[in-house]
Amino acid sequence: MLEEKIHVYPYRWVVLFVFALISAIIQIQWLTFASVAREARLFYNVSALQIDFLSLIFMGVFLLVCIPASYIIDTFGIKIGLGIGAILTGVFGLMKGFFPGDYTLVVIAQTGLAIAQPFILNAATKVAVQWFPLLERALAVGIATLAQFLGIIIVMIATPLMIETDISGVYDLSPMLMTYGLISCAGAIILLIFLRERPPTPPEIIEHKENLSVAKNVKQIFFQPDMKYLFPIFFIGLGLFNAISTCIDQICQTKGLTMDQTGIIGGIMLVAGIIGALILPVFSDKLKRRKAFICMAMAGATPGIIGLAFFTHYPLLLISSFILGFFLLGAGAPVGFQYCAEVTRPAPESISQGLLLFTGQVSGILFIVFMNLVGITPAMMIFIGLALINILLSLGLKESKMILASRQIDVKQM
Image (tube, rainbow, N blue to C red; front, side):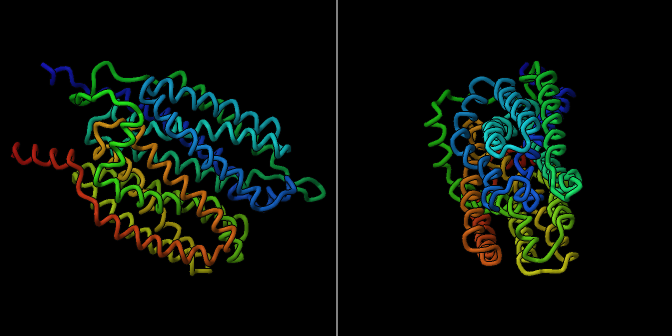
């Protein structure tokens, strides 16, 4: 009788689309100034670190809001949790547009947007579990991750094109910030209209979950054996991405590249991430393999980091950026998030994903500050060593028990 009630609804793609849309928008707001850091310094008449601070706010606030946001998502549902994130995104995105020239007000707006971010990003695996069957979930998380990459591509490539100059050659960021503000408001409205909490019937047989406190769920996740490897993997991997994407303008400046070339290099990393997210999670679902794809992601990303550290020629930097994005973003993030949701069951997906993002935000802050203190080139040398450590850590993972059980079912049916 239970199997008759299991049904997969086409509306799941609508839910995934509106979630992907708001995910892309919050990434645009996070890295608004990353590819135009030099111009932003002149526009606001502030230091390089003060411009990086506009991105660092997101990471710092995430540390404070991550667990409360995950608790709200898990307790009150994705409609309430994502709704909070969407409203904050629309309101504070418009605030940046209305007060583009006031650095203090922009900092306040960035703080409001930073509060919105965990309400959005922490919901990805929860959306997948609510609406998608097991063997579509890596794909669903991959598409959500793809949308984040798309947002970053837009901000890396389109932002320099929207910077205007007056007759005297002074940069004006106002049109760009207002455009992003209007997009944020429209995206928030679309999500609030079309988002649904869950389908009428579940896409899988629902496991019974013991109703534990947040503290007990966090403890359960931390003491899961595979998380002793996955936490440091995300600490390094996500931290490296946060640092490199935030400081991409400084990295390219040391190599003598122009603002437009900087935008293309940052954008190609995300294009590669999109291509990877469309391909690799699908194969992970079809082949019923999680560990192999995480190992491949860590091994494949390392040559990309080496290339960004050592190469100075523009074409070689483009190739390095593509390799890094394809493996680290295309497989490491979406497959890693889904693997975490599977190995930490029955802990809530929003909390397990939130903790992974939490570790990446901590390391992102540390790595960005480190790059500003010791310099870009020495920091990139250290990053290569960290990438090699990640390869070794990924080898210590064990395959997801849910995936192993799914393989056994296939064997029995043969």
